[in-house]
Length: 236
Image (cartoon, rainbow, N blue to C red; front, side, top):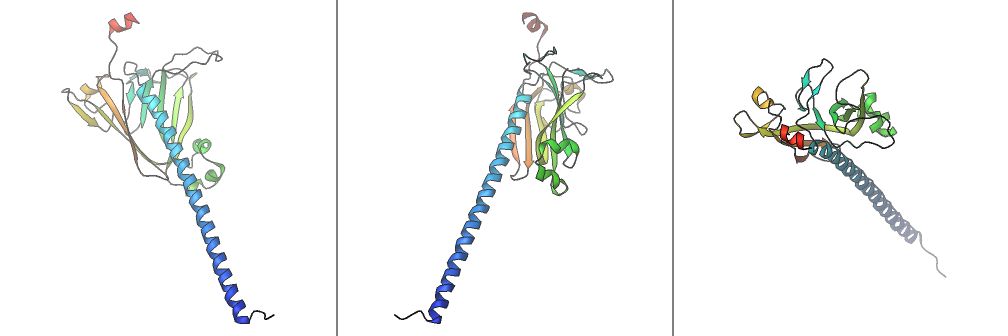
């Protein structure tokens, strides 16, 4: 029987190498694509979780309940300005049957952007992300709350990481101005003092989130704008 010539062996080896290389390339591309899809799914899950957290707080906003700060000064039920990203009073805070401490179902909530390298963000990052935190882009979004509404020494803030990393977040407020016309405001209460004294004039809040892995996502929620009258409170 005649064996393979050297040329035939070289051709066969070349074809085998090409096929093997192509197979490895396809496998590598498949693995890379799967990792990217998995990462995007995780990004979407995080975005949905943030959306739900914000929805619960904003849709249960309580315009008739301002709070006293640590200096006993009365603060509006909702605040958003250059110093405060978002602070509001909300209702619907479920009370646990196993929690012996009595409290209201009202809750004071603060959203705050913190540098991603802060120790306060650690709980919202994986161990790998935390090890590479100096290379991450953006901040982390914290949600703080107190056991009781009013600011007291025995009433410290508790906090949780809502989203990390987060490149940017912006808020826009749709409400009534001093003339009763509907407008969009970059802060709340508006700089117009008269409008700021109308706790029922806020109609909706638009939140834009820009997170890692996706472009800006915009959400719009209607908020309760009707303030209880004395007659309403007596009927409760």
